[in-house]
Amino acid sequence: MDESAKGRTLVEDDLTVSPDVLAALARAVGSPAGTATATLVPYFGASVGGESTAVDGLGLDLSRALLAGIDYDWRRPFTPGERVHVRVTVEDVFRKGANQFGLLAAEFTDAAGDLVQRQTVTFIERGSSK
Image 1 (tube, rainbow, N blue to C red):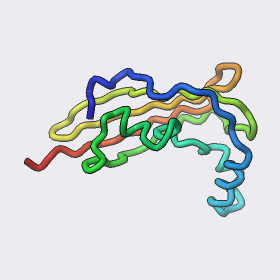
Image 2 (image 1 turned 90 degrees about the horizontal axis):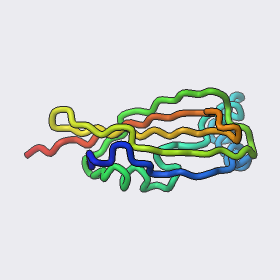
Image 3 (image 1 turned 60 degrees about the vertical axis):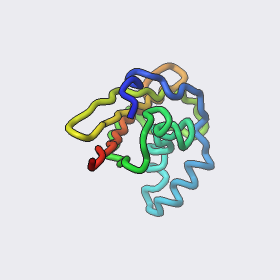
């Protein structure tokens, strides 16, 4: 993992919350609460810029990588059709023993600049057994 990535912005973009994506998520949840649940999790911040956002941004070696966790700070649900601004940054990269940890933060704000959701995603890159 690249420890110099700390503080780097990986993605900054404007997105439209797709009603079709929300409907597909609601169907996948498959419960009476599916529609409401879909408006809470239409994006996975670590890959919002593409599937390699986290891998390339952190210099992550996938042969030794684990997804360690994801934390959400919900301010309100996303609204179908709304425009949001997303910014994904490398919040921290550090070593603990033989392992490295990388934390990505994704912040989604509405047109007024108010926070809709903040996600923090933690990756671990296991140390080699040498």
